[in-house]
Amino acid sequence: MRNLVTTLGIALAFALPNAAHAQSIVPPPVPDKLQVEPPNEVFLVGHAIGTQNYECQPVDSLGRVGWVLFTPQATLFDDLGEQIITHFFSPSPSEDRIVRATWQDSRDTSVVWARAIESSLDPNFVKAGAIPWVLLVVGQGATQAGPTGGDTLTGTTFVQRLNTDGGAAPSTGCSRLPDVGKKRFVPYTADYFFYRR
Image (cartoon, rainbow, N blue to C red; front, top):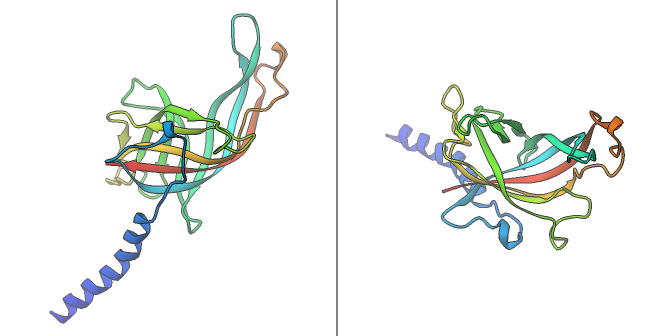
């Protein structure tokens, strides 16, 4: 019996810091349209370092060209600097392979796909020259467990991209048809907050 009590005590000692840490995640103030309503609660935050990747492409029937985002490429880290998630674009299996923002857990390989429903460049929140803050919603069936049953991201309902720095499309280098096909990889950082019910 004593061994059981000791084992339980050790288990609780290890579990409590993690539970306390999970409860201490507090997103920064955001514009009203980026709020996530209850009963959804933040359960995970990842600090992203990566690039927003652009390609010069035709943007209208008049022959004008512009920088178009073709994918982000970022690694998300926890508060201790450990890699936890990879972020990119990929086809969502639940939406006829429509390309969506994607996050894959680095440890259990669970995946979530989400689409942007609101964004903001409000200067009261977003740094000048930074990509917008964004609210993304996870569609029905747009999560996937890892091959061994990993489920860290499978309950995700919303994702917020906040605290952005950098990543905006270049202002030069894509103004003429001969520029089509050029690519630019623009460094950025952001915090991604993951919600579930």
